[in-house]
Amino acid sequence: GLFGEAYRRRHEITVTGDEVPPPLTSFETTGFPSEILKEVLNAGFSAPTPIQAQSWPIALQSRDIVAVAKTGSGKTLGYLIPGFIHLKRCCKDPRLGPTVLVLSPTRELATQIQVEAVKFGKSSRFSCTCLYGGAPKGPQLKELERGADIVVATPGRLNDILEMRRVSLSQVSYLVLDEADRMLDMGFEPQIRKIVKEVPARRQTLMYTATWPKEVRKIAADLLVNPVQVNIGNVDE
Ligand code: ADP
Ligand code: MG
Image 1 (cartoon, protein in one colour):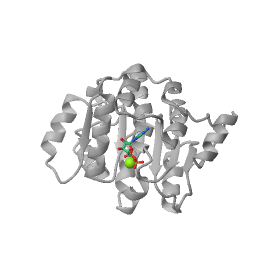
Image 2 (cartoon, rainbow, N blue to C red):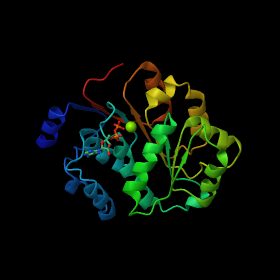
Image 3 (cartoon, rainbow, N blue to C red):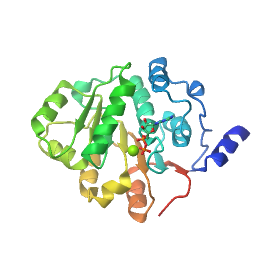
């Protein structure tokens, strides 16, 4: 409606895709389960950020998303909360492998995502394992064996563990490529493509990037199906 249009203009949100739902501009209108809403309010947040407001209703329709937004815009919860709701709907056994997989370029970023997943998923009792290089594999493999609903991983380490056949991605139905432009800059494209080959085609895929150059557009075209694109502010190519 008109209010949604005004909100988009005010926050420089542009959307491309069929019948894009209006932004959810307050937490009360999200319809999130109470245990998730509780954590968001506990964190002291007063309103969704623009990327959250616009990407939540799209993600909740189980559609693929490309979101182009600068660092610090709240992208992590933009994909984590719909991921939590996806997990609640699926109810899969985490011992068979993760349902939600988040790929992230660095150990530091992967760890920050895990911290947010644990904080905001606490009341929902989701388990989350973080896999990254520069640390021994043993403890990470042990954690995986106990089962994880959510795996946050750097592409290099996840690919190593896949080659060892110590994790199955056959249950993954919600795949996030966070900081896709940085992952490509760091040369992770071959690992990303190998990983995605192990994820069933019947999935929801969300790609987050700060910039929108040719290489990122190419991998988005290959890995996403009929995505809705959400841009916040001016988009750098
Ligand atoms: P990005 O991934 O876009 O760089 P983050 O997801 O890391 O951004 O979020 C940046 C900071 O904003 C984090 O500290 C996060 O906890 C905080 N944040 C997320 N959502 C909100 C919100 N709705 N209101 C206020 N702060 C938020
Ligand atoms: Mg981020």
